Length: 117
Image (cartoon, rainbow, N blue to C red; front, side, top):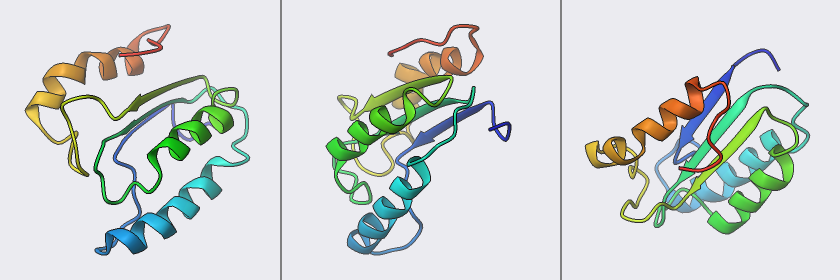
């Protein structure tokens, strides 16, 4: 609490080069960070893409984000595997920015952030 006003993450993963190793270790590390998150006003936007070799179990990630963060943070928006974008670099394109840039900006800047994109 108090460290960040907003967190926006795309294709969250642990560093490394082996997708299997990174996915398993990164997933466990990610869950340990989420579980027990103290109540705070921080807004959190989490974006994950289909076919990201570093993601692990995408359905489980989305469920845990909702279960563990929804009541603990100021706002939570999960953009879960948006259609037309894939892989670990799914958010690194002009097309992604053109389609979702305004939503990210509104989530960060608006007095009342959007609940979906």
